[in-house]
Amino acid sequence: MYSSVVKPFFDRLFALIGLVVLSPLLLLVILVLLFEHSGKPFFIQKRGGFHRKAFNIYKFRTLNEARDANGRFLPLDQRVTTIGKFLRRTSIDEFPQLVNVLKGQMSFVGPRPLLIEYLEVYNRVEAARHLVMPGITGWAQINGRNHIGWAKKFEYDLWYVRNRSFLLDFKILLLTVKGFIIHDEVEDSTCVNVPEFERLESEKVG
Image 1 (cartoon, rainbow, N blue to C red):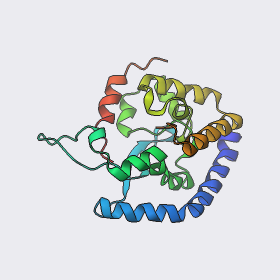
Image 2 (cartoon, helix red, strand yellow):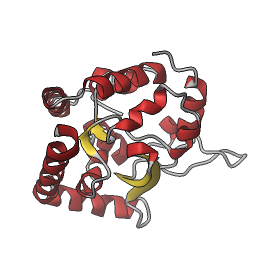
Image 3 (cartoon, rainbow, N blue to C red):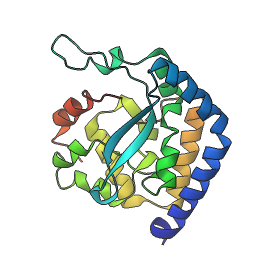
């Protein structure tokens, strides 16, 4: 009842409120990124969602498209723009995902949606993370964010799937807000596919 009715209702309600309240900030960021990225302020990418269904995720663009001599994208840390560093540090780059929540494609809390290429890499246990709606923040994000490896992230995601509840979601949201205020790092069982996930992650373009 909570996961299928109550949570989706409040997700959409608060996503709408958030978009209205944050609209001045969102418009300002859009204007800045329009100039910095030649009219392309948004990063839109296919991600794996609820029950493995693909959807377009929205983020503010934080990376340029610099490539090496062989045409491959440079490492992520070499492509993050100045404004992109600020947007990532404050998690403002994730704010457009309120639109995904409003459309019923995401929740405020849940495992982070990953590239659709990952759907072919999951083992049977890892695939269970798609039994719930993907989220803007989650258990893995408040327990290490980018400081933990893929294996640990999957462990946290699967723990959330097994233990999800209103109280757990509320705790995750509170800790996420706390991390946002103090600019803490509050992002995005053994995983045998960790190297493959790391390779795919290095090829992100947004």
